[in-house]
Length: 311
Image (cartoon, rainbow, N blue to C red):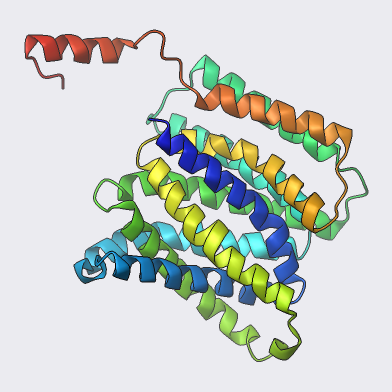
């Protein structure tokens, strides 16, 4: 049962590194082009893995439609907002706003639709995560311009897209295995991103793009996209969407660490305090108490012993 949480940990580390790495990419490429290259490359990598596993022959239009629809939101719309936001606001803002607001929006949606209950433990964990994110954001300091604020709202829109993607993915995985679902969702999203990016291709100074930027694009396609999205799907296949998105509370820690190392951005004491609070909230909300089985679990065990079937 620890495997899905290991998948989530690796995913969150990779997601954290995506913020500064993407910031480097949009510094030299139009944001539409950077997004298309990242997910176009990831789609090719996933397709290659699918072929090597000899699963490509099992293609069906029904599976493509089922997995592709969430991909239009979780891949296309999410990254359209995400890369656009990077041109207006610091990467460190996104590493706080996106991963903290995604679980909040996911949990609110699931509770309002009656698909999950808001336990006291989860609410406290979410509250701690949000408080930690606020402290983390305040620790950044500096004046906020109109463009900066617009970028933060775009990050918020990206968080909403990811919340929808997490919820929709759970339903997709009831009929499609994680690798195929990830490949189809990424492929459909990448195609949409490419269509949007086509007008910007002629104006892109391809010859002037540094080698370091191409290295970042390759890393983004393989690590924070192909591997991370596949691992995220594998985790969602086992745990609930809200649990998976709550784990994103740890992304600010990894994102800030990557920004400090690779972009030489500052890291304040207040940000450390916020990061610690955020991690505490994530752990509290994600880790389930196992000392006492719940009522439903007890009922199922009793029914199993007596040969009854619960509805």
